[in-house]
Length: 248
Image 1 (cartoon, rainbow, N blue to C red):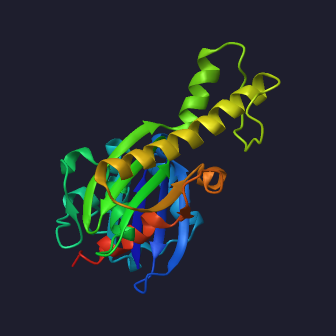
Image 2: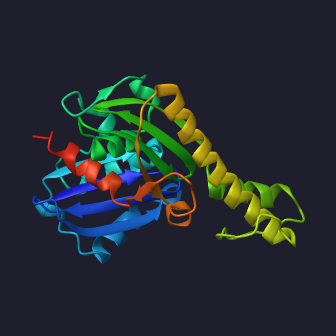
């Protein structure tokens, strides 16, 4: 079996995957609070048989967390703990930008959906809201906008009279109190941002695209934007499974 992981700014997800690409277990924890003792407890609690692991691969945007997990796994298993960025991916995808400037999670997402027939825009609601543009088998570039949760928290932290708010779908634009006004601003503001950026991508590249949305707030926006989009919460792990086949 394989250990495949996605270390994001907020959360880390680790999947235990069989040789036949079946997801056996999934572990999720906060990225920046992890330590070796916590990992030991998590792996024991989930009854992970580390002696049966044959491959370890991560995509990561938090180097310090990756190093902690790498140290833990190296102590338990005599296997290389590999990061997507350190592999030669030329056989899977062409990259038209500075490779070092693209998060390995975004490259994994692109590899997950890539084919030689279609163009894709992958919209990921993570700590940042990212748009990745895939033209046939080429990663063309992307856009990074402020994350929804991060922006909400910043507003409530900086504005004394605005409380912590859970974002929900709203039907009316004009709010009747502070909470409904903020919800409206964020909900309709991000819906407009999404549609506008997608339209600008289409205009600039003169291409049509299949749009895939994923990440934390994807459920909220999947049916609320004007752009037709499909929803895929397993995009990163499917990309990691594809990439893991490169490891001998």
